[in-house]
Length: 85
Image (cartoon, rainbow, N blue to C red):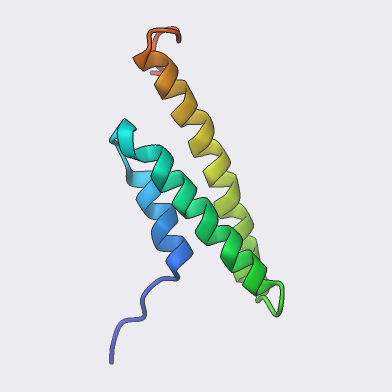
């Protein structure tokens, strides 16, 4: 029996969460956000509650990544204070 692959939006989200290269993070975040939004659009036609909840939690993760990513860019330019410990 073949192992079921996770949905595309979950793969994109994990790629964004795991990305450590500042030059790639914004593109990964945008890709994940687009995949999540596309799936939400499709899910509105008949979502399962568990997936709907997971999708909205994924969007919250994207918001957090955007916030952290913008902080990281400030540190690279020397505009942010000392890093988070």
